[in-house]
Image (tube, rainbow, N blue to C red):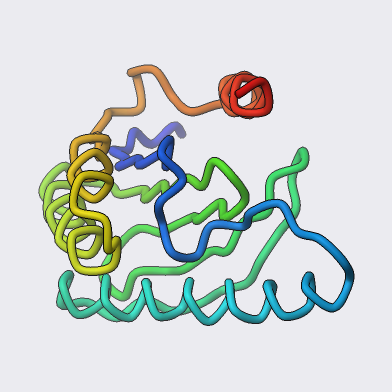
Length: 153
């Protein structure tokens, strides 16, 4: 049985999200940066929870095809994946469009509250998209192309 779903995406093209994993220097900096990034990520999720008016449960992290994910489960329905290396991506999966629209609105509000640069915040808010399963999805190949383009700049 195949279940259709709706998903919300945000790809941080301007690299402005506070938790995004940037290129790092020496090992001590890497350890500090990793702890700081986790703290920033969980702070971002707390603001998102408040704006969404729904609790999220952290269910772990994963490494798939060079992408580092943190995953969260919504208390009502769906789950959230955050790929936190540049360019960071937020992908939330839902069964119904109403939940996706509610999340997209909360995500935009969270970006507005957490991204300090007003212009970058506005750009990110405009990058939030709601798509249905049959539409174009963010695949590893597409993410790889974005990463390669980013490295050329």
